[in-house]
Image (cartoon, rainbow, N blue to C red; front, side):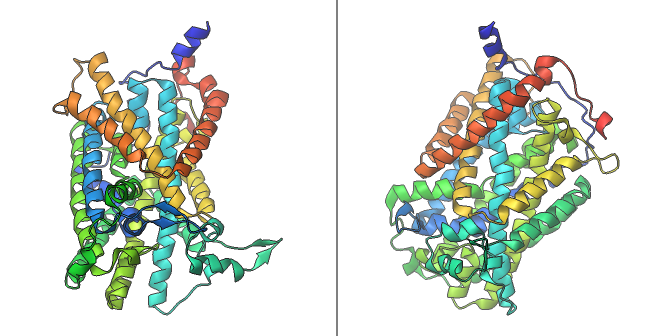
Length: 503
């Protein structure tokens, strides 16, 4: 009996399940590519680039990670290869399994329920927790933009408690002495981060078509801003800034890649739109691979320019691109880039929050989360309850959070999901070799294992503290699964949940 129960944890869900979930197919290949660019280009290139290049020092002066220096461009190339291998696996599975849920849905169909839950819980790190880091980074650029207008908000209203207390920057750490005190606790709240999360939640509640239009506008703005940064910055490159090219050798390139991996997170968000995509078997692979290819090229160009404008040590901070232009004596261009980054990261917040609600929707439809997450608005055809709840949770967390440790936690969760997707596509080739595959990975027995090993390699570059955080997160997830999901699983109980009953 015990063995039967253990085996049931790895029971897979039929690929054909849940063909109709009450969502409307409105998105084309162009929408998906823009969705991918909207998700990928954001806090990674505008914020974590600085930490990857300059490194990170803890509050006690200890070196948490070595900086890549100008060799940051090699970190981008390395990650482009890693994510390209994973994207091929995503493309094959997305075309075969066009369901909301991304890696969660693919794992459920290939490796079973328990591993699907683990990946679904890891994807919460990528989307919901990742959005906390993006909101904090957005706040940094927003306050820089306001400063360009001569508006300076109090530091205690633009920096969260943990952002101040865990900072190795003396200027930021000193804010604790200027903050008002309530019940003996310094009041340090990142109000802009909270407000932008509320704004994005309102936009998402308007509907998927409206959200896609808003994203397209913001993508156009972010690409124009990055073009401005490259053109203006290229005119002020000092070749001496490229020396030494790799100040910390391969260690710096590896550890730089481990944090700037955050810049690549988002291409898989395209797959969460599977049930709202026209002709998903064709459009999903185009969106995933097209979006990733465009963004990798942009990253390499921006990395070359950023590390050439100023010494790489000067890129440390929440707004490295705007800071580089400012230090180069280009305040107007710096302000424009800061304003563009505000728009850019708003698009990331929009796509990530969109992706998280769809993953919750898929998990709840399978019975692993409560039924309220399956509620679809009768007129707007969106999971409105999940959208509101996630918006509230992300907003409250962003009030106090610190971004660098979140980047690491998000990266390890996402890399775990990517690893299992690479394994899952191999399992399905063995288990169901004759199934129609609208997109097939060439040389799969070489490329898919290479993608899985590459994910493990990048994970090795993360700080040791990240493993403790990740272990605690997974322990919480397993507790939720065995206390709720295990007993309510549709696959195990046979009781299908009807979306329309909850509309």
